[in-house]
Amino acid sequence: MSGPRQELRRVQDGDGPGAAQARLALTATTPRDQLRAAILALAIGRGADRSTCPSDAARAVADEWQPLVPEARELARELARAGAVRITQGNRVLDPDEDWHGPIRIRATP
Image (tube, rainbow, N blue to C red; front, top):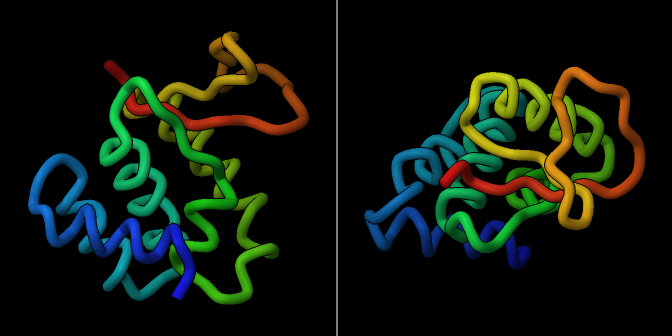
């Protein structure tokens, strides 16, 4: 079992912030629903001072995670538009509607 998947289980079992999303990530029937919930669970579970990566969410829900990373990035963009998370590169918060490339991090909104 991968580290991010174990982290989802810890968040779920702790029944604190992100627990409901972690449960959904571990039980949802579609990869899209799993990814969306995993992004939220990992970001919320880590808190506003820490971040997660789209690949963490993909690894949390699938053994063959690499093909899911582009969808995880797009879901992070959608969640940022909704105000549920912030997307960052370095110390800069990215606009979800702008064109950006390269590594990103996902943070819970404060």
